[in-house]
Length: 276
Length: 231
Image: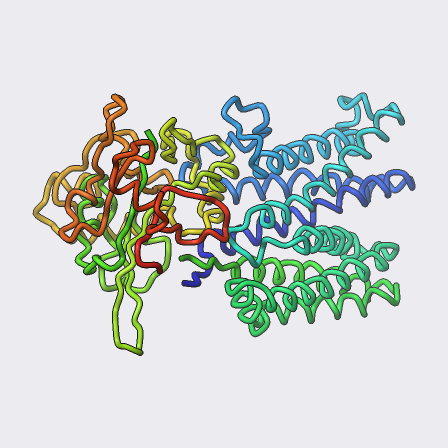
């Protein structure tokens, strides 16, 4: 008997989209800081704090015990934490992303730079920026690994899902800076969106050849406006961004983030089990 | 002791006495029985449930009852972030209701649909439209029960994921097999409970002889629930 997932729905899709945006926004923040564009770096860094914190808030609101949500902040420090659970490693990565972004961004904002004295050391900022960027990439991958790890839902249990999550991170994080008018992100929006669309299409095709539940999911998603719209928007973003002009890149940024949300929602909502 | 559950599909008549016994024993919200919830999937599922399958040639209807399979290799335990899901020395998979935060990851990971998350809308519905309004003791638990549940730390709670416990609260810790509520009430003997470590146990013999089989051996999770008659 095939049953569609109703446990992780739209709120989780929103949460994971926010994480996707933040994941590569912090990578770009570090790159812009290296280039001396402190203002642009501060925006990405600040969003590296706000968006993952909002994502954890959404996750907390989805729990049956919201007051225990604090457990999701650096859960590795919790004596009860189950280290074989990806959620523990993911929530730890999200917490470290928030912490790293905060430490990286504080020295970039006046007058907070007077308190954040570590900002005066280039080495410290380089280390912080690199670490935060690494946590960003890790969080992007995590949003796929958390789905792909177990076999319960065959549509998710695929190596394509973490890859898809990584490409969605590239598209959404670069898309954010595209919206801010940073034309140098255009190529990355194009690459991220193009690879997202391509990977999702391949994933749908391979799933349609797989076990019954995966085939059910793939057929459902392939006829779903969310999936089709997501792929279409990602393809449009690729085309718009590839020319590298400012209005095109800005539009591509919006399209890329919208596409990431739609594809993520379709991936989550079309997950299905095949119960005995 | 290694408790094992055998379901003889050929003997099940679909009376759902097992479901009722389980609901009463553990105090689950019984909104699944409401017509408005007919056909709704796992979120309104109970710890044990009975489905039927129809066949055309020859015309037949078979009732398939299910519960947690208490896997040997437990995906639910692996993904639980707080360590709330654990296994007893006897191999019974349980949820520590205090540790469970209700993230739902175990439900996602379970390939058998054996876990469910009490949804707030169900609870609200149960409070506002109790099926048995006169049962005052029951109203404290949602207004839908016939008697208060047997008090135990694995009983139904609104704030934790719920699943079958093989009625582990009935085990006295003396190494002797207990009898789950659903097995006690099954009128046809379709539900059987035995001890795999007991060489003279007739239920365990069904498993050892290969008459009773796992529902999905392809998933390689193992388990303590076997079926006679196939699915």
